[in-house]
Length: 363
Image 1 (cartoon, rainbow, N blue to C red):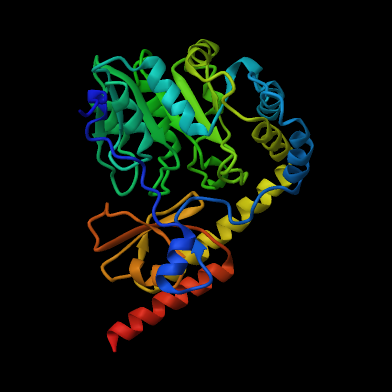
Image 2: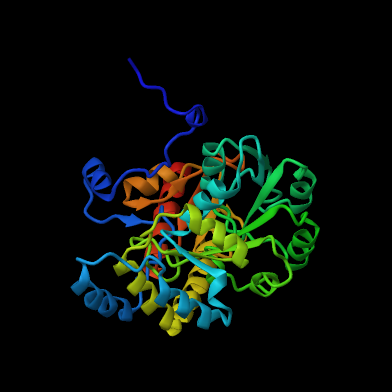
């Protein structure tokens, strides 16, 4: 007899992780694989992190600091804000889960983009909520239509800025106007996992708005530009009363001690962050222009990845040559995929592969 799971889990599928590097090597008989399917920092992490982990590893027999006090202190100093506004999490994804657990009642609604980070939808559905998905407009959040979708049942609205998987941002004036118009009893969850990569004058830093908007929650992470994806450290910035509710539903020791030490050390090395951002910006432009010259379009990205699209076959050929990208059919093109930015050597290799297969098919 099958034991029935909760009704809310019907129709939910596990997050797709794709093939492993070893599986690709075995399948295609290749030695080198460039993993550009997950949005990781190809430049690694600060050298200060390894020393911090070495020191913290001497105390693995102790439970981690359940209050993440040292990291919270460093974040508060870094942003010039009071400690009460911060909560540290097991990746920013945990904060999404905690927000849904703390605030979504059965049949509450959450507004989000139709194509965005899928864990918003999953966590809302698990709590019995209803997802209201608004189509993107040219790869960007359609803030006007998202506002129109808010009603008396709406409990929260998600804005991923820059957006994953399209890499796009919304304009600063449009976003400021949106935040101002959202009802004060609706949580505005700004997922800014990639904000350190954004260098457009149109990108709005929402941190200064926290004092004005009590319903604003900002999510950021150490997984992206800080290069700590394997250690899972995220953090949220919000009003104290919201943080208090999230503390009620989080696990006691939700962030391990090595992760806390690594994140604190990484935060201290802002020179490394600036260097990564500069390299990323240059490589983003190089790859975007290279793909464009080959007839492959992409949305204007402010992240460490591009969302590319074409009517010609690309993904299978890249995989066969050891380049892993994440295939995503959204824009109506025959081929659409998200590719994490690599090094110049990676990008030159990718452009050679694509040029070669396009030439072969044209002959």
